[in-house]
Amino acid sequence: MTLSRPMAKTSLKWSMIEEDLSIADKFQLVADLGFDGVELDAPNDLPLDEVLAARDAAGIAIPGVVNSAHWKVPLTDPDPAVRDACVAATIVALQNAKAYGADTVLLVPGVVKGETSYAQAYDRAVEGIDRLLPHAEEIGVSLALENVWNDFLLSPLEAAHLIDGFDSPRLGWYFDIGNVMRYGRPSDWIEALGSRILKLDAKEYSLTRMNAEGPWKGFEVELGEGDIDWAGVNRALNAIGYSGWVSAEVPGGNRQRLADIKQRLDRIVSL
Image (cartoon, rainbow, N blue to C red; front, side):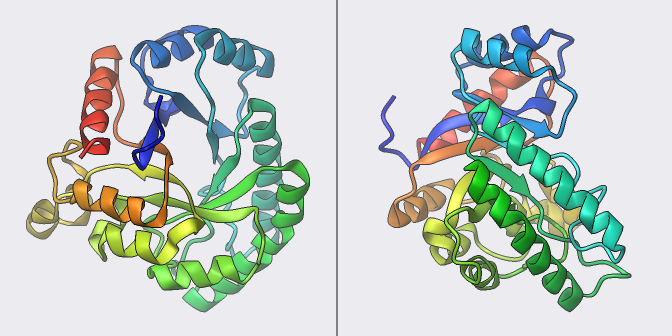
């Protein structure tokens, strides 16, 4: 496969596979649909030997893992014990990623809410990342921070500043293209983050539905049928020299649903 296009390799999230299949059959389904990889949540209870055997038999990659604990135990929680739990879970996720052959762990860096101010979230995120980076560097897997609707790191310049403050090769950004549409342009984020972008998540967003029905309704549109300028996204990615993974992160389903998602993903990465 050529890596000349920016979004060169396609994956999806393990949770999107909603057929009742064995681990091996799920990996084979991913391969049959033409995806290059699948991302798992971690920590998880999947038997490692089965995962590795299924990965190898299907001939697909596990490019990254998604931290399965960062919402339940946020890195910016007021309770130090909760923050400790997030650090501990993230270390396990880093270890899982290494075992899978993945090179990133997606981490939501924090959440601003009633009991946690923006300034507090920033300070606690810095403290938590500072604790995690020695483990990431020792294990050889990068932490990839993602922009989500957490009322935190709302500017790409701020996100870039946070990453640069650590001067670590094991810290970067997992850019979710659809998530920024509510308050910005994906191309602006790509330009500002540049080489800090390690991987991409693809979901669609409709500003029309957002304005008419509310912010969350903006996501209720299929890939390629919303307001994201995918050709512009590709141009911006080309400009920063990105050529790597993009993962679909949309409502999943059975084989037919996943096949449709793959076709839609193929169209937008080719624009």
